[in-house]
Length: 163
Ligand code: FES
Image 1: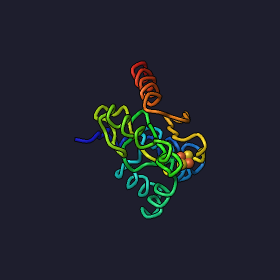
Image 2 (image 1 turned 180 degrees about the vertical axis):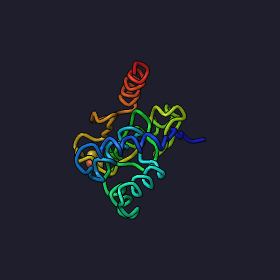
Image 3 (image 1 turned 90 degrees about the vertical axis):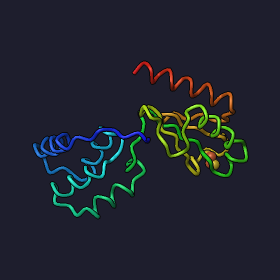
């Protein structure tokens, strides 16, 4: 069973109503808030937003799928990205990815059952000379080995327990 966060339509309606108090909200700003609240854009939310704002659903999906900041799949509280670009793979990214995947018990693109961790891969982070590169909650780590990946994961897991 995959991680499925709860979605409350009334929260989206409240958000839209709150936004209407000021100037006309932009589609982008509404999507940003929904993404921040749920860590993804639920399909029902996109439909609700489109109807409420009078924006074609195709346009809403267009924006939601264009920007990397948005996700149509639920994400965990902590997102770990392993670069699997050529330079990082040559330097051992496969082992790093396997180590993290084994420890979390999920495959790339999946989220742990408790909704804490999402493991993703990316093609290049623009720091090839530092490969293998791992980004955990936005923090870059370079020259990651299996041992360093373990330590990095332990740190993120410890932080997850304190939140
Ligand atoms: S290939 Fe990994 S940072 Fe470029």
